[in-house]
Image 1 (cartoon, rainbow, N blue to C red):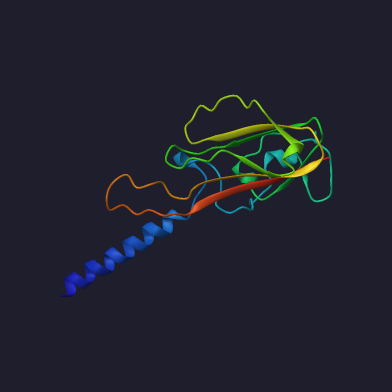
Image 2 (cartoon, rainbow, N blue to C red):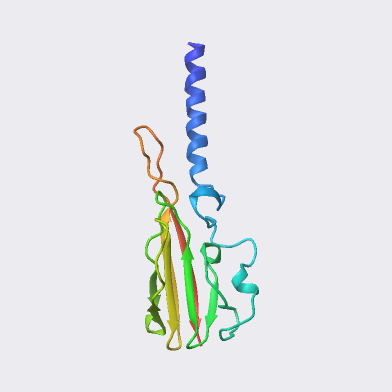
Length: 166
């Protein structure tokens, strides 16, 4: 009887650890980049380079490509400026197509090029009018199980930025 109790407790502990690991992402390795938290720990390279966009209180000028680490931030872009977004994913945890909401006439989608890896999402935009646009995407927090009995989760990693066109 004691041996059975030990196995049940071990199985329960292992299951909890497996499920807990599903929600904690390091942002590196083969699983793609991007923290689960929408607030980056430090400013990205796009925030520290010289400005090419307009400036406005409470937003960072867009100077280069945005990535998953930029989630939750607000960026400024001058009319005529361009914005590129690349979200690195994996085939097992793919990013959905980047969607625009708000004053969508402010940004015109332009040719991004092509994606080389399955699971990545990318878009490019040109600022054509004043307005505020929210760009967003999601991807699974956990890869889908590949065999019976594996744990799965239905959680989504969200990514969004706000772009103010001046």
